[in-house]
Each structure stands twice: as C-alpha cells, then as structure tokens.
Image (cartoon, rainbow, N blue to C red; front, side, top):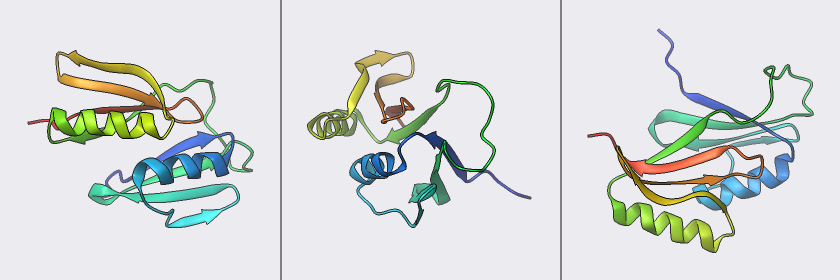
Length: 122
C-alpha cells in the first residue's frame, strides 16, 4: 500500500524558494531542475517546490490554505528556531503564542506558505 511521503508547494520564484528552504532546513536540495526542486526531510518525507510556470498542471484556486508543521521536542527548541529564523530574515506571520496544543509560532516562505513550529504530539 502506498503511503504519503511528498509535500509539493507551488512557488513563483524557484531560486528564491530553494534559497529560503536551504536556509531553514540547513541542507542542499537532493534534486534540482529549473522548474522543480526537492529536499529530503525527516521521517522519509520529501518537500517539492514546483514552479507556477511549469508546464505541469497546477491545482485550481488561489491562496495558501495549508501549513507545513515542524514538530519539535520542547519550548526551548521552538524559541531557538524562532530566533534563528528571525535572524535569517524569515517573515513571522504569527508571533510565539500558546494555543490549546501548546507553544507555537508561524512563519511564511517567499510564496506565503505557512510554516508552523509546535510541540510533538505526545
């Protein structure tokens, strides 16, 4: 049986998006062509960045209605990532706050995709 293992984001400027994710993930893309790049991420997942100018069919609609979650061990790691990302110039869409599920903040990539940092589910 197939299991999900790929997240694909539509991006306006592939070079800017690769630079952004290279900075926050701390690694190089494992695959890169002008209209698509991908990064290997933990847990057997891949993050794909597909140019909106690609000849591939893009999903209908507009806007960024999803989030990529970075689930970490504790609040100290959340605060460290927030400090690191702010130092790198990452846009913070939602400052550090405490929700029913614990401490969290949300950043945005160059295309406005939401990146949530929160605690691992226990």
